[in-house]
Structures are given as C-alpha cells and as structure tokens.
Amino acid sequence: MEFLRGLLETEDTKLLFLLGLIGILNIIDFLFGFTNAKFNEKVKFKSGKAIDGIMRKIKFLLLAVIFIPISVLMPEPIGSGALYTFYFGYIYAELNSILSHLKLTDDGKETEVFKDFIDRFLNNRKGGE
Image (cartoon, rainbow, N blue to C red; front, side, top):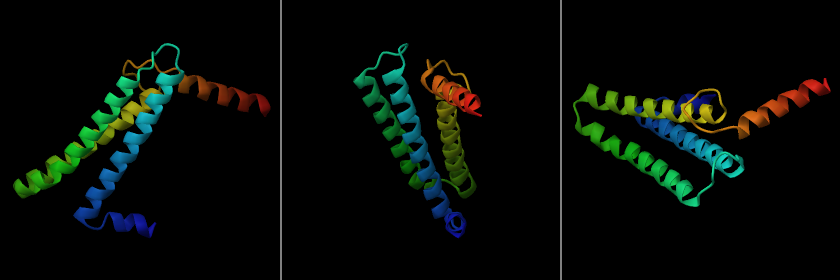
C-alpha cells in the first residue's frame, strides 16, 4: 500500500500512474478485441484491422504524453485541469470498451465470445455445487 500511496504524492507520479493505467487498459482492450475477432464467428478477423487498432492506441498514448509539456505551457489551473480531463476521459472510454467486450455495456460491438465464456463458466460452476 505504501508503494501505491507513493505514486500519488507528487504531480509527476500522478501523471505517470495515470499513463501506466491507460497503457494497461489499452493492452486489455486490445487483447479482448483481438480474441473476440479471432474466435467470434460473427466477426471476420482481418490482420490489417488489428494493426490499425494497435496504431490507433499508440497514437492516443503518444498524444497523452505530448499533452504533458503542452499543459505546462498553459496557465496553471487550465493546463493541468485539461490534462486530467483528457486522461480521465480516455480511461473512461477504455473501460467502456472493455466492458462492452464483456457485454456489460452496449456500443454496437459483436462480442459474444466473452459472454458465452462467462455464461459457460457460471453454469458449470452452479452445476458442480
């Protein structure tokens, strides 16, 4: 717990913590999307689309890093406020995308792979008790 508290002590470590969280959420979202595209019969897997997804995530992550020096150039409350708004909005979007892969939210994705897996897991577990 001390390590986590240490991450939130300074402005710099807060930004690094949020960037790390964004990176982890990007990886999880990509893996869920890749798995869904690979194993879902309703979705045709295309490697070009997977590469486009990776490149899009890299572009947004680079944009998140580039916004740090830009926020320093802006007047104090505006720059850091805009940066945190961007980061938390991006985290929200990634979480929503991950939850939609699990069919916990609806954003139009054809994601039955994880829903079927969870249903099978819960049904087998209930049957064994």
